[in-house]
Length: 340
Image 1: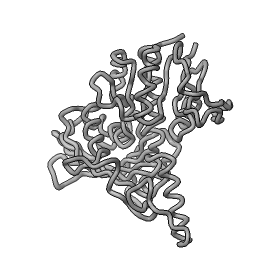
Image 2 (image 1 turned 135 degrees about the vertical axis):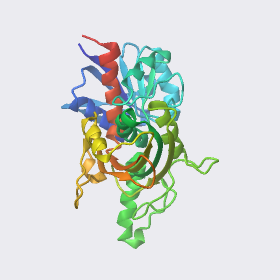
Image 3 (image 1 turned 90 degrees about the horizontal axis):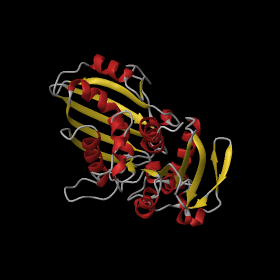
């Protein structure tokens, strides 16, 4: 016996990826509804070997549905997620709307699977920000061994994190570089993204941080440990899919790089590719379509006591969004709902 599952925002990048991953991981679906806004009504999407037509989110009745995976913006989520939750359908939300709500669990299944049981407060579970999700998968097993005091992270985030408009802008600007008569002015991003990097994701805050950087701080504390100090610099780079992060860690106890490497090899959701030779590491283009979070360049930081550096790469449309949401659904099904 399976579940009745709705994918909300099924025509977007993340929604389509959710459908792909539900099929790939053979989530026990008895019935699936692909939901979208009225302007996308009737658009066809794929679910395994099935082709589904999207239904109108505005008129959809969530009564009798078990799980809804939301992949729409915060504004629309604010309208429809409570409606679904009140109908008895558990909402797994990919927007930022509920991440910092103390009554809503923020879950990365490799890190804090037990937190899903807190869904009962509002019938909602939040999915973390894409840059946070991959980082905490790497932090948790190391934190369990040596207790992390401080994290300094610089991100290299792909344009798909800004949606289809971000990917289109990179594509159009790249073409225009070779045809100067077709100049494409920045719209989605603050400056030209083609052949450039932009140290600005989301809005600026009073302390000079951007909202994206603040998210990494707040979410890491909520998911892993409130005592961890985190400072982040988040940068948009001209890559279509795949986020990379350079992470510097300071521990309370000494952790040798060889032991750290072995801990990460044994950790769920992680693939270690760390050879000290040309090409002995993973880059964003190599992680696309993969479920794993890849860790490379593990090495001691001799400038501080108990320091370690590592390089972390993941497909942001998967682990950073769709995959984590499906993993939450799997955890919910295994720990709480348990049909069949």
